[in-house]
Length: 167
Image 1 (cartoon, rainbow, N blue to C red):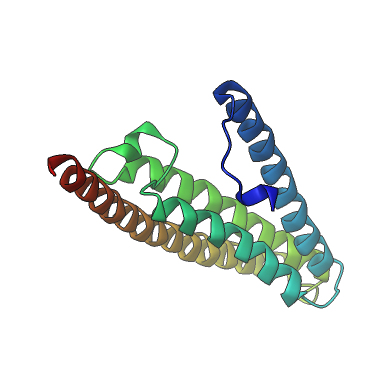
Image 2: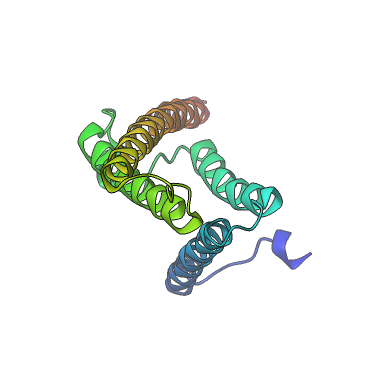
């Protein structure tokens, strides 16, 4: 029940604790993702439960922030204009990582074993481009949806606060 009790908190301690939990969350996220990738690369069956829990944790964080009117931690996201340049840069980096990881998994699993070297290079390039394009487009689209949802919620919260102060 202590999780739900409101009590005074030292702001400095809260800020430092939030940093600690943030680092722990990132380490945990990367570890789970690495475990999923390595298990698939070793030829094990894809663990849908592990993937579902991983995605649920990410989605819960995004939804909670959007409901609070927060689109992103970046100061560019606090404005009314969608930070396309920064989002596109991040999406491209994630797209490159996804393309490389997918190609490595295919190589480690021996998917292209029977192909000639030129065919392997072509298959790897096509796989990389496909994964890069799909991932980049999906991330930009999802970021745009979260940005719009957070800004709408933020305006609604500010509108309610203005109405309360007028009374």
